[in-house]
Amino acid sequence: MAGIEALPGGAKDLAFPREEFQSRIERVRKRMSAQGLDGLLVYHAPNVIYLSGYESINMYDSECLVLGLEGDPVLLVPERELGGALIYSWIEEPRIFRRTEYPDTTFRQPMQAAHDALVELGVAGGRIGLELRSMGVAARKYETLAGMLPDAELVDATGLVESVKVVKSALEIDTLRRSAAITDLGMQAAIGAVANGTTDNAIATAAYTAMIGAGSEYLSLAPIVTIGPRAGIIHSTHRRVTIQEGEGVNIELGGAYHRYMAPAMRTVTVGAPNPCVERLATACITALNNVIETMRPGATADDVARQGMKGIDLAGDGVIFHGCFGYSLGVTVPPSWTDGAISLFLGGAQVLQPGMVFHVPMGLRILGSCGAMCSETVLITETGSEALTTTDRKLFEVVA
Image (cartoon, rainbow, N blue to C red):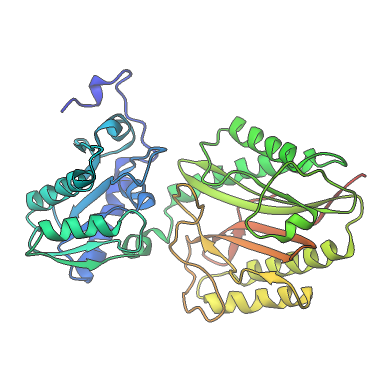
């Protein structure tokens, strides 16, 4: 196989030093051993990136990292993606598989590549973990692989890699700081674009332009902007709506640096806010402050959520709240900017540790009426927490 030296330019473009990736591999192997696994097939796209460095805008295409307890990991990618694997991955000899348009062979070829790698590592008859709750492992893929490995025990290893990546290294934290700085520039541009008679699309354009201009890569989620009554609809976004005086403008966005996302949310009004927006914004900001003050090593998800609810309750009845007081951040691909490692809910027993990084999204909505939001990307430090996003934490008002 042609090596990286055969490509124009020849040099690798690694997000992190090889030693960082190798440390991740060793920590995953310790978890594998603890769970009695002989091998692991990593199909979940963010986890493939986390362990190998390989990335593409075309993930979830049967790319896979095959791990045994010993030996070099094997990276499998579609033939057309070889260039990206050679450039972005620390693994020197990525393997390719070919895809065809015929239904009876589309899944067999990448599965055959995974089978062959397991055989090469000497674990094809052992206990093999798969991330069965990832959309990277379709039922048909599983059935095909199971038929090829009659002597293996295939078990669900969903969450194994996440249990390693939930605590970020110093290099990852530095990367998230870079992402947060890009997010803040986007937020400042978006807030500056809010004006009477402006559209939500114009605000989203300002945010996107600022973040891409500041060095962001393609985004796991595009800038989200909702206005007035549409701000009361969760997971909606810009749709050519014009701002009216007193209405709330919800802005949610996050820059991307080496696929690490650091989101933030703010609400802006043109002129004085109407009472609905003001009430919800006060509750959001109070909840966010309570959560950040509670986030420290040793605190549980429930500890954090209970303090957050004291702010949410200020909004009164009839309010839609998603119930999540934080979700972990890290390597992501569309359509999400959570790394899926941990979320903070009432009753949660997860214990916070230094190096964890969360998006703390306080968003409240009244269906058909209004909405408000405020959030930060927050790092758990040795003694407490630190907000990595730094835009003023308030309800913004611009002159009508």
